[in-house]
Image (cartoon, rainbow over all chains, first blue to last red; front, side):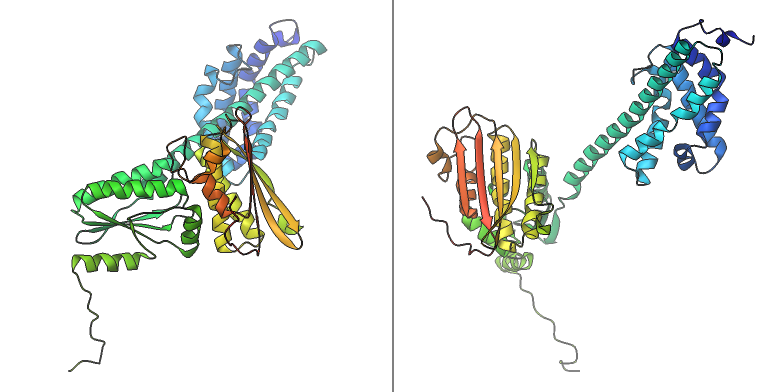
Length: 299
Length: 146
């Protein structure tokens, strides 16, 4: 008789699976390397895929060794978590849906299962079934780990992008000596308007601006909260000694504001940024003179 | 009807992010049903006010959009419901400038002026349901004030 696995009574199913994983590490990794998931992720060389597969098998064996086949947080997964995340992410980037990635992961199970069954020719049916079940549970946990990692990554990405949006979408532009403008774009919620107010007030100090133009051409909806944010910003700028002009009020927005009963009060408004700039330049006593057209002047 | 595809939906209102989604959905639905730019803007603005009320005062809820047809005219109905504390004095809540929070107090009354039909049901402890409807092609004239 070769080894203890023929006995069928030795070791719990979990131990059996652990020993099997360690024994068949090479073969499992070789078979996985031919599965779509590994083939698609490790396109450069097959050896790379086999190495990655071995790392996953090692992790699974370690998890089985710790008797934690049902625990996605088991320490054994830590070593391959990053690699699994990369694999999952690569497949998502290739345009696969979560369900498709999940089924590619599920496809890793049958080859291992066949190997396991081949290794238990003399085991009692009960014992063989128990071992296969344990392996299934372990592979299911692996799927959970990959999916969990992918979700966490996605959430982290969304959080980063949200922060980026806050920063990116609020530039303060110097239009002229003493004139700054903020082109507002997108939704002006409380967080955004706080950022706008801070950057604008800083710019007013830095540029020694007497006039600030808030352009809302890129704000799709002006409701009472947005109006309130605008008025607070205007009031704060005024306290800093700068006059605010709100520009970019489109016809549909103007009508809506009237029906809504919004009154921007003493705030100076203009329909376009150009009008606002013209008004401010006039206030500063700066005139724009059209140059003489080509060819019209004396030679 | 083809035009109704993508119009009818039930959206959760649980966070500021959901408000963005509500506005985008209403804008899309209104455009699809053939509302003009001004009417779209009014509906979206009304939805924004009402959804924020649902979130801030109602503690979150849902918005349901419905596509209506009456006498060849298409309409869009938005139903905002929450299970919050409700409103004790509807008259007062609808009056401009009154707020129990720190807003401008223009939301509810303002939203009523932005749509063709407006109905509100609420009692203390029983949540609030606001139902607004607008029709395509109807002049945006001032609502009959009650």
